[in-house]
Length: 444
Ligand code: NDP
Image (tube, rainbow, N blue to C red; front, top):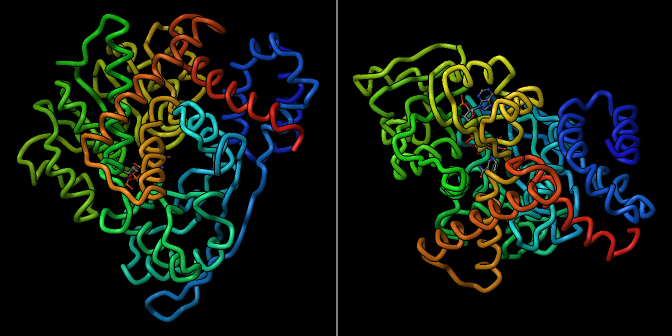
């Protein structure tokens, strides 16, 4: 490894030993960047990496709210404004009990490189709270979102920081937060993306991450002489990304035979009934365990590993570190051809290395799930122009962006690392654009 990169990584490990997810993301990125620093000694002289790995700003605040029984509750919320080198901070908010600074810093770092890869002028940020929307009433969710915005509104704006959804934050939560933002600021602008279609949202945003994932997978498979049609496909998660990944996979001729939620997974050798999964997860907010009885077919496994299901294509779309080395070994022994990350950092470092060593095509989330933020940036453009594009206009741009991302990571891998190393390709291509902007802007 390049000595400068090693020094910066060592410093990070000493300073943040209590931030394992952030260190994992930083290690994955930094180890790929060695060839860049070998070729650009001026980056070291400019202290570029030390500046890059430290978020520009972190805001931490309390969110007091009152539950339905009249009891005051307090959660902690964060906004990590990671990098504004190439545009306003942009990245989602996550509501999940596991949320902490380490997770949000890792997500902010990933987001910065991902946003760079889209080719659009957006910087990187991420935020969220340890609030758990599960089991809360509509009124409780609304009061929480409004209280969170009572603080967050002063730190965000259409040209400064544009939040969106993530785990636990969908159209409902974005609506409540945007409504409160508008009330507090008097502004009707593009400060949030993922808004409802009646108040500035973009058609195609709901589907964008899942669809974009499959556009990239399709390009990657074709470039390697493979065809997605007929491939048995396993998808983890049953949320926004997973559901629309399943939908596009089926449209492209793949057979989605397993999906999961945080309690267990379902298998259905005929191909999952996606209308039923949407009804269960998006409408009823129910558990996947109800699937076999309601579908009249398939099998539910409580707990367990969805990756035990033999498949050619595996798409982790739930959360970080959900595909471990043992899972990777199972997938390989069952003949998996490609793995592409719909979620952020779902594959551990060991599992990633193993899959790559075994010749499995592997696309990391920075590239593979960039479709969501790409359409978010298109939503920002529509808001700024006071226009609404139709689905075909948005979807054709999404397809072009994902194709361009694939070409970029593939070419960058060949130039700096080795052909087919899409992990290195994504890290290097994403980083180079940010690095060039930072160099041009001086030490700020
Ligand atoms: P959702 O909240 O809509 O869905 C998440 C799904 O993953 C749910 O099915 C949930 O199960 C499951 N899940 C969550 N946490 C765990 C866990 N600890 N163990 C097992 N399963 C879990 O989130 P999204 O679909 O929006 O996001 C999924 C991933 O994709 C995240 O990593 C996110 O950062 C990433 N991503 C999302 C984008 C977007 O546009 N939404 C854009 C780019 C990346 P249950 O139903 O039981 O809660």
